[in-house]
Image 1 (cartoon, helix red, strand yellow):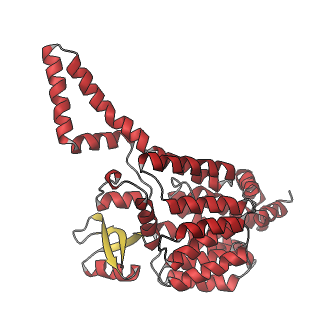
Image 2: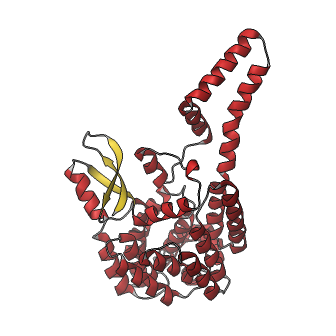
Image 3: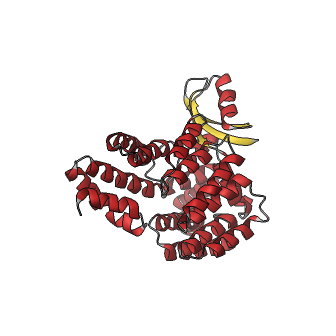
Length: 376
């Protein structure tokens, strides 16, 4: 069974979070609702649970923070405690250290001696130094993802190497499988897709990776090689292996209609996804893909309505690194449909925002649609 993380209104009537194990997300919802929970939103599904497990395999368990369910819920939405809050929490929880520091400071002040104050200062500085050191993997991974959004593949490879070295030194960071996946994407984007696939498959041999996860990761690798039919084939396999996972069906719809003209298949996949529990991070993809379907069917007004809804979801998550790409993509599609609807001034403003991104990420079809609509 999988452990699912939810937020909602608890039986006591307060906003809270809860984790529950079940056969699938729907069963988890039913379990919580039977206890009196309301307004439930899925925060962590099989994909997030698998990613967390993979990261833990190569990390020292002593560095693994013991989080409350409420803290897990915030982390799932990319909300992390700041530096000073982390420092304060560390001091509060380390009561012995805090007591020693208070004693040293009091002794130094009452006895006019310097050395107790120096020792107390060093103890206070110890946590910030450790915090800054172990926060490096998170900073590097953030920069890696931002580089990936803009297809700066040399930069992505550089940060992958830095992360690998940091994990060896600190035992804190992302897992070896994620590093292999990133490097495989870099190779695929540079025209070495077979080498990238082989690298990733070698990394999965000892991981007992579920079929749906393996197919899903491989589809992303083929995406960066622009082999979209092969990618869609793998997305179908992933959905067949995990039919109760909404994200797999959203992935099928994305592969069918974003770069390919399989509109009917995308409609069927979206309908299946909507019958399942869609995680909070995936809700914006439903209107985004419906917007692309309307755009391909020549209904710009209907497409614009869906893209605006998607933009609202994505902007709420703008603090997440990878969401930058979805915001630009949605803005690009809004530019295309507004230009097609005759709203040239609004579309022209959007085009100024997204043109460089569309060029960098080789969004040729969307770029041409914007230019054609604006007669650029």
